[in-house]
Image (tube, rainbow, N blue to C red; front, side, top):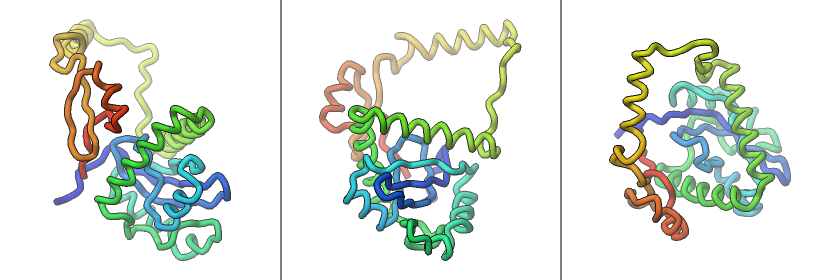
Length: 214
């Protein structure tokens, strides 16, 4: 079965903040904050040794589809690239990494670690969002992501305003069938619960959102 199309396709660089060694790879995801650091064997041995909190991920380039991303990684990460003594890549790009099942496990572990770091390390949070911001700015600059429409000085027609108001009323408040609820998952199953129950589930290692699909 073909892989379901993801929203984001990007080339990233993960750096060990202790020794400055780096890993460059590709990733496709619907969530830019999924905690993914990479799939290299050398990289994950380093993460186990030093702890995920001592690594930072920078998004280098965005791509419109997975095919273009694979080609870019293949061209960039060649034999000369991996000869750099600071590089943690062990093989040329474009050949893939972990199995789908292992990627799911890695992403689950990454989400847990990011949750802990967000709650306990303000400096890490600042670095994380700066890297995200810089990566998106570069993507806009390079044309990988379309520049948002500038609505400065523009207005909607009266007809458009009425339609927007009608849709907004359907999406908000108790008229919405999902009002007061949210989705959670534990990597095995997804379910919708009341917002008032969310904290209880999160304390039992559930994650907010639906289970990732491949």
